[in-house]
Image (cartoon, rainbow, N blue to C red; front, side, top):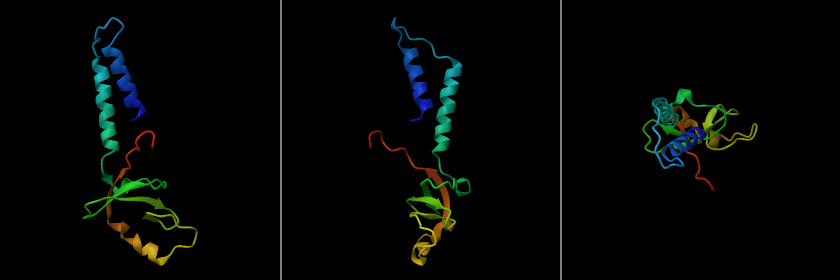
Length: 119
């Protein structure tokens, strides 16, 4: 859960229960803010075209054309390809590169979900 969502939940909680036990009305702007944040979260976690994938080394869910399940890959600058392992310097084995050479078939990506708290 993002900090913004936590903040919105705290505001809702504070407006729904007061010391006097009276529910305070939510403002129209607050409801618009909630809707905007939820739409942003949905967009951030939706499948996106591969051309927009960040190449910063973080692992992402990647979907290949025709695949029913995604792969977890990251961009490897040393070989200029999406990879599921790290290559050390010039020790790029032909077998490992062939294993990931299907990367041209990747059509969509999305961020990995956050791990549960306490794990």
